[in-house]
Image (cartoon, rainbow, N blue to C red; front, side, top):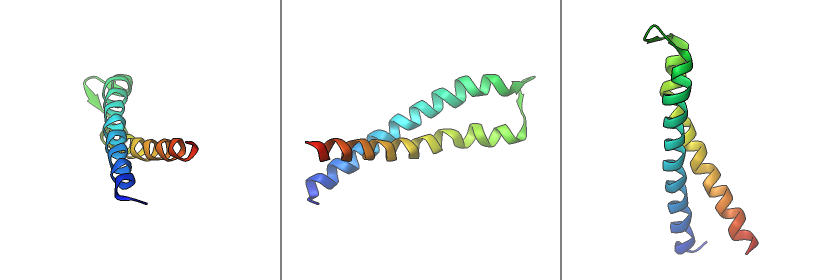
Length: 76
């Protein structure tokens, strides 16, 4: 693998990381939080889901972006 290909993979991974983080914040902070907030408080099991959800989606977004890029690059 050349250094250009490695840099492209790194760039795609960073782009996927930020895209996954944005989707995670939109999904967990806006939608899921509104469903599980009662009386202005969040119960303990859901605090972990709401707190770690965006980070998990960021890692998944980076992995998916690299997989899609590798698949696309392999076809051409």
